[in-house]
Length: 107
Picture 1 (cartoon, helix red, strand yellow):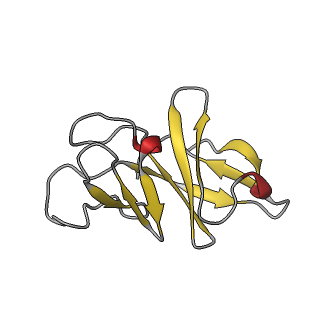
Picture 2: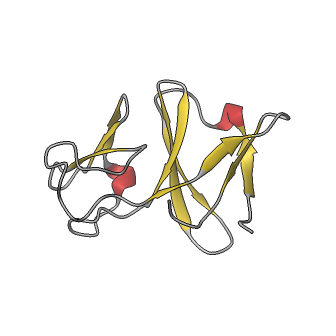
């Protein structure tokens, strides 16, 4: 059974922001895309550069180094949707108590 890891209250992830968090076994970027949370890998699959340096617009996170753009919910490259290197995503949820939890098992 998958393990959910508490990473903080929802108010630590305001709309339109992204934040890198550490879990027991990895770092993950949590994005609040128009009020909906998504969790993605911190490294661009194209060249391994840090995605936290990129820009989040709506649900699209664009790498600051080579302008590769990814949908934070599906991980697909928005310019080349059939590319074989999507941005890895992780399951994320908000509990009834207003806490954000993620699974570090990739979707």
